[in-house]
Image (cartoon, rainbow, N blue to C red; front, side, top):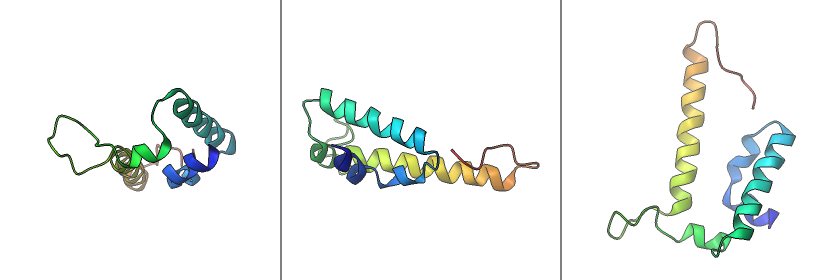
Length: 89
């Protein structure tokens, strides 16, 4: 299951704190164990049912949000004087 989570979330490697990275991984493992869906299903199901024939999958949306959040944090770090955000998670 750990490998399935790693395939879903290559961004997990961005988490530099090993304990936090492990806790996030364990959360996803627990969620998948409790779900009727399999890990691969998350790359196929639509992000929303409110958009007919939604072309964006659940995981595409989730990963995009993570990328946007990271880029936003980086921009805040670069433009803050003095820097106000932690550089490491």
